Length: 170
Image (cartoon, rainbow, N blue to C red):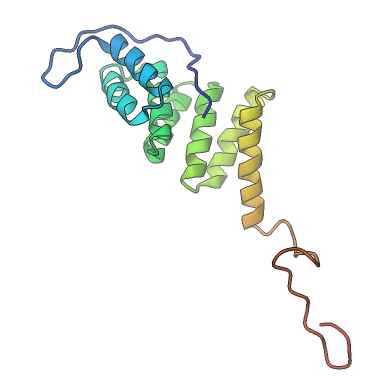
């Protein structure tokens, strides 16, 4: 996934004092979680960002970063829910729509994937990552629907039609 939060709502600072709570406040957890994500430690990032999202459930930037970390950690259902939460709160958030779409694709829900990726592309038609993801999802849907038609002679997997008695083909 392409990284970078862009909604700028900021995470409010608060201090954590409960047992087992990481040091610092919500903003510190957010920054450390994003840093871990950038350093390719998504599972560790999920831990901090989930704590931050619990403390600040309305923060779209925290929820988006959490979704990215969950996706990169292979937690696709959780990532979908995180991106869905952001997209429901702000349907014009193209990155949330994109995240929802790619997570849905990883879960095998290509119809939902196509819907949300199409929204992301409509909002940011110049984004090559969005367009590529939508193309892939639509190709998968087309292949599953048999939209490519019969195989042509010479193609891998092609089987010639059986010959009829008398020299013709069926």
